[in-house]
Length: 69
Image 1 (tube, rainbow, N blue to C red):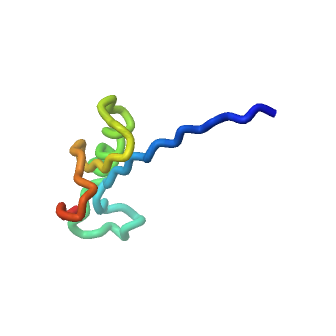
Image 2: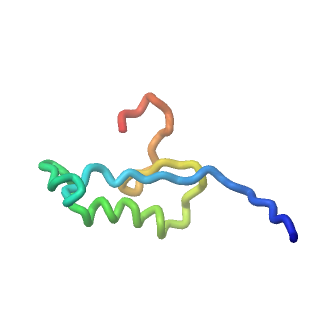
């Protein structure tokens, strides 16, 4: 059996924010599921991403503790 070496890179993360869905019991003030999905799909389809980043609404967020998420 041949061993395969894996090079695992830190994954990306994306925050769709609080969405008003059945899962959140139609949370008042939540964003539409479509807007939350757009935030996720941006990271799926964009080519400018590097590994180990955190995204929301097409904007890269700081991973430091100085930024309120």
